[in-house]
Image (tube, rainbow, N blue to C red; front, side):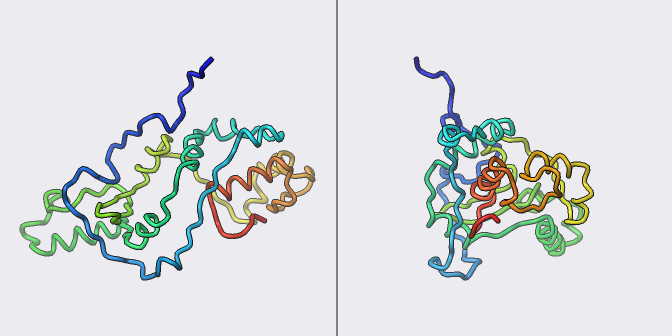
Length: 221
């Protein structure tokens, strides 16, 4: 019997604002902003995860990511990576923050303060600015990526909670004892933040996090 489930990749993505308009007839050229030779740009790629193989080997972790809405992201990791296009994108990118947008607006107003003061960005002929943008050019098209673009691609909420701590404040957390019992081999000891001290399941999750979410050169320690 055929499965009736639909994979993430088979569902069309609807962007509120397309990051790239391939229907335009205009050719877009963007100057290089990062003077680094292509051959010296090293791409650190996110690693795909074979959840079925992990399950067959006693680590059924798929639901942990499914419950947080991340399966679509892992589906994307199984797709192709066009390394030359990625390098070209980053060599030509500009990061437009609120600070840069304000400077752009103020310079435009200063051209004719009497006429321009109090006008909106759109009225001054400037692009609308609502959030930080990465602007670049790729194969003759302009590309604009924002946080909204990414969350729409992943189909996850554009909000969340971020908590941070220092080594000293972390030790005073109300969750220290629970973390030790859940994650570490020595459940009664103080958590060390060392992967080698963790239980097998937690070591695997750390490897997935560093391989698929926060890829870097070298091994997690």
